[in-house]
Image (cartoon, rainbow, N blue to C red):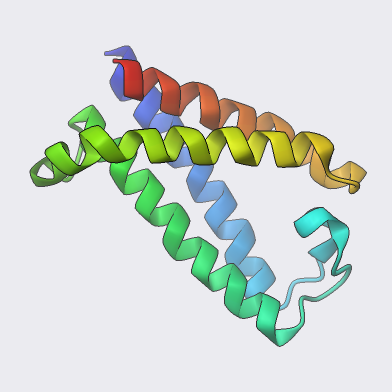
Length: 127
């Protein structure tokens, strides 16, 4: 049961990050809350494309977690059983980068989110 709850929590948090990335791609002036604040205001066109690529990657991560938990995409289980460790490593890297970012707002907002993503992905991985 705790694995399913962790998978749903992970997917919900990833959903929030996806919405944020979609907003950046659409031109919302929130660049100081991402990428270390390197692009304050609206993202330039190349970074908007990068935000859309991140949406695809984040959706894939959520799919792996949901598959590993048995909640969805059960045909992917064998793939997800190995790929879950990529999700955990990704979450470790994201957490470290959010801790060390120069952007105080990115650190305040996204460090707790990435830490929760790490904890929930590890719960699913070890479950």
